[in-house]
View (cartoon, rainbow, N blue to C red):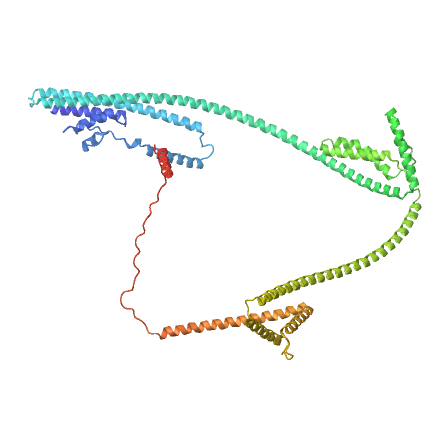
Length: 602
């Protein structure tokens, strides 16, 4: 058993060394099953503890050797990376520009550090393998020495079952070692593949960095070229803007000149028309005839040949200098300026140019057709005409004033007659309404009298009843008569008393109509005031009466004897529970519910 224990300890050391070389790796499910089968055996816990350190294995033999070390906790690593990145950002804020690094230099520095770390790990693994091999050799020598020493001593007897158990344990340990070696080989292959991938990624990154640098250079060149082009274009734009402003100022000046010339031309046209209207009609007719003849000759000349000048132009040029007015000078100026205007106003909108050209052409054609001739050669002629016109105007003004006075008188008479007729019409309408109402009342009275005659003439009523009714009616009429007129000293019959009452009533109504409306309004206000005062007094009396009644009831309650109730108070019987009527569902509702159940739950 001592030999077996020593061999087990050597095997455990070997497995520990292999576990240290392979690093902290996750166990396979096959290994977990082997460890469970070994741990289930009694007395095997001490031989199958595979911890990272032998000291911990001796102290805690039941510790699980396949736990993930704290170095490989993903969340902790992620938190550390975040903190590290935050610290780097804070550091970059405080650093100067020449101390900062670009992304490509950072990547290269990381790659170099990673390579150095991989080289160090490989060297450490080689050292560990060498130390593990030396330990195995020492253990083997120690075992062989122990076996040689123990040959001289007699061994204890060992049962067949113990031997089978020992062999089983040795086999399981050897199997676990083989599984560990395979896992180590697999991890080494994975590490080599990852190294190849890293090399490829480095190569790609270098290519990307080179391409990015080329892109930046091209972008810089393009930006420089674009800036140069933009500067040139801006200079050209400013030059064009200045030119446009100059041209616009020239155009505005020309437009102001044109508008000024047009205003003067309009004024001169007004003066021309005024003078033309003042000239005698005979001269006007002669001028019209002359113009028609000139137009006919000009049309004939245009038909024969378009080159020779027209008669109107010849007349214009051959006219004496005494007859040329300021209008002709303005026309010449306009003709001289017209080509310059056309050349300058080309870039403007087509509507403006067309309107200006049409206006110029119309004015020029009219002016060329008309000869600048005047009937008046001396200003004294105009003064004489003005004096005559003033005298005529004065006479016209006097006549108009007289006509206006007559018209005002007629208007006043018309207004007064109109108002009077309207008042009469209103009065007549009111009379018509009053007559209609009186007729309606008389008709009602006649109908009532007819009804009473029929009642009295019927056979149902006896003479005694009729006499009683007549006496009662006579009494009432006498009462009304005494109140309205006075005592019935002459013992008038009932009909005469009624006639007297009606006459008194009609007189009162006539008097009431004659009373001014202001007085009626005052009387109505006084009556309304009296009515309100009376209502207020009645209301106060009623409130006082109610207050007295309340006080009386309160005194009666206070003076009344107190009744002490004995026994239990009577209570209402509890109502029986209400019956819940079941709602009968129709066949259509049931079919609909079945369809919904089939649709939603199948």
